[in-house]
Length: 293
Length: 336
Image (cartoon, rainbow over all chains, first blue to last red; front, side, top):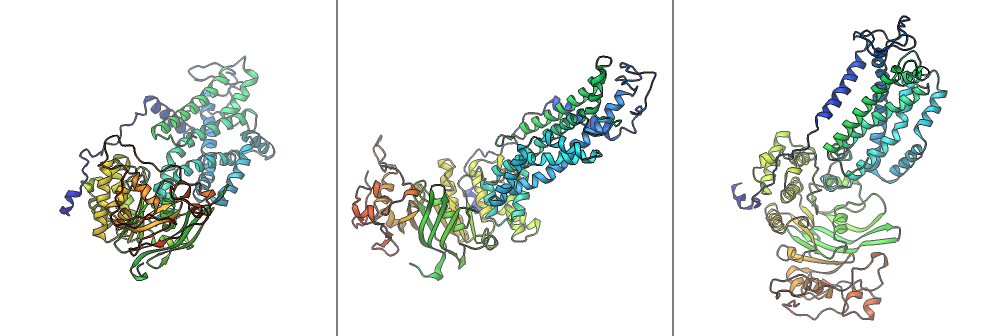
């Protein structure tokens, strides 16, 4: 095909740039990732780690301050706060992961489908979701969990997960909508691509960055929601520790033993901060400017 | 007009009407034309004259709701109007392909360009992976992309606008379509790149024996590259004929106004550009008469009351819709 030579692009400077050097994610990003990783490892391996049993009550050390033996001190029943914080992360993390699994599992496919199909399917579904959104999630979850007894972790995950579906739906639908009207989607269509192919090959990869950063922020929101429920005594039943119910328990003995409030709060704050920070950095990194969350 | 056999595309009384809050909007109002094999036809008109809607309607691309299409589009005998998505999908890519205005948005930013080309080859033509890749690289070379084997792995963001439009063309040609609809393929590009892309399209059309519908608002683009021209105004054809006739012996005052409003090299420096007074009509409030009448210096009462239909001019195939056509002349020179 050498005779095509003369038709080669005459643009002498062919802009095949090296992939743009993006702004580096920064050390703080990796610190946050490390912290999340540490939390996850701690939650998974809590019972193999050399931790004091979180339910063992040591009456010789009630409301003890931090020491070498009890790193974070003990609570009013002499239970080790450090090990309770580590075990408590299991609840927060399962709620975060489980609820988002439900929220994204249902909300994301529906949102993408609605934005791609449009028409009546979209308008009915979107209006239903908006009605659900109008109802404050925290009130709804409190109401349901108050009556759905006995409480269990699974029920909490299901209730919070279902409550997050409309939020996920709205974000994914909006993101897909902005992609679905792009010329390259129409171009794929007139190449004879099937709807399934367009959804998976054209839409999904372009929606993914937004979905990922929203997922991280969603996990953080859901963990905070579980904390709020636990503080109201609507999460897992004592004596199982969770960050929320530990803070709740500390309420009555705040003056004798502030450590009981400090450490679980710190654990939660640092965890949520890290998640939000990672989500935010990733959004910048993927340069998601077209769709506002 | 040519007989059915020799026509690749037969468009008959095609009308596209959008249902809007303000009432029905006839974006395309009864367009008929034929396109033979290996022919390039130009569609020109101002912005909003229905060129893009016409192209999309021919393609069978409409929003799922709020649109009514009547008339017929026969592509090698296959009806494109009122058929299911599946039937159209069988023709898309392999019979008819389309390239879009803006190469910046017509490539998927997160997929390597090679993958976007061999998608059709693998899925529609069931080529094995290696053969599809080889063919994709061949296509990249055909559209004049240097070191195509490397560019196969590039992302669209790594290519310039001209390069991207070449890739878009390569994608459109992957299924060896008989008809290519080019909707203002060069508007998003620099002037120098525009010429390259148009020459490329010209060359590919010859090599692959395609027919091309070239939609543009730039008369300079269609002047040398088309055999016939359709002039559209307010969704209707106001003049159709061979390129030579339309440029040299046009009868419709609108065509003349369009031609006069393009700048010429022979003009004295600082000559004011001629403009068409007024603006294109609101399609929601079209009058009974000629849509161009309000802007036309020849308009009479008849023009405002009755819509002219296309009537044949002297040369076969040349027709115009005007009550007061410009006098017949050969070699009409357009003066400013």
